[in-house]
Image (cartoon, rainbow, N blue to C red; front, side, top):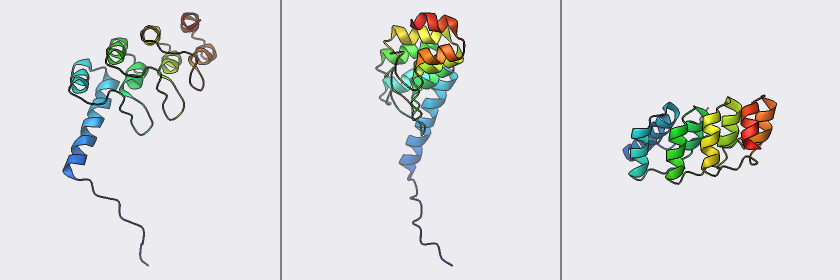
Length: 137
C-alpha cells in the first residue's frame, strides 16, 4: 500500500529562523519581557503578529497580566480590538482574568468593551468582576 498524499514541504533555514523569531516574540509577550519584545518590534517585527490561534503580542501580554507592556504595544500601533480566532478581545481576556490594571490600560488605549463574543462587559458580569464591570460602565 502506498501513500499518495503530498509530503509536507520542508522549511528552508530562513523559514525556520522566521518561525523561531515569531515564537520568541510571542513568548516575550507572555512573560512580560518588554525590553526584548519592544526591541524586536522597533526593529520591524509586526506588532500585530498572530499565533495559530489568532492571539497577538498585545492579547498575550493582556491575558498574562502585563499592563505596562500592553500600553507600550498600543503606543507602537498594536490593535487593541483585534479578536483572536475564538472571537475574544484583549479586554474580555482582562475581564476574565480579573485584571483591573490591564483592563484600564486597554481602555486608556481605546479598547472597545462591546466587541467580541462574549464581550468584556458580559465576561465581567458572568465572572463577578464587579470592579471591572464598573470600570467598563
